[in-house]
Length: 52
Ligand SMILES: [Zn+2]
Image 1 (tube, rainbow, N blue to C red):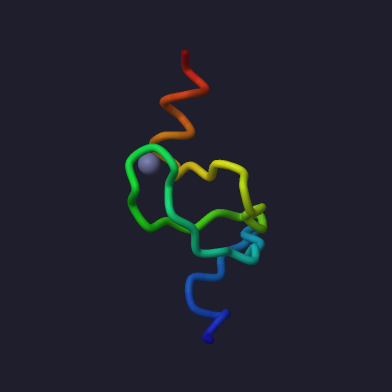
Image 2 (cartoon, rainbow, N blue to C red):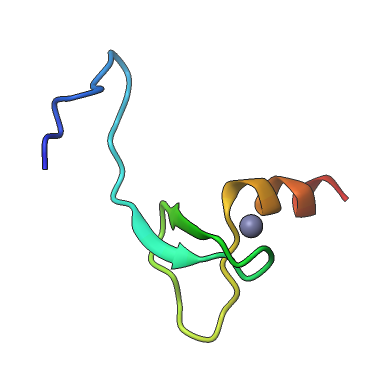
């Protein structure tokens, strides 16, 4: 993995975990470890839900 690629000042690479969005079913990456049995949402769905 090339971590230096895309490195910018102030940018901290976070560990990303692959997950399937519980809403749209798309494969996505989340900055936290997905917990089994708990829904995971992609960025789009997360924003969508937050906004309501
Ligand atoms: Zn989604």
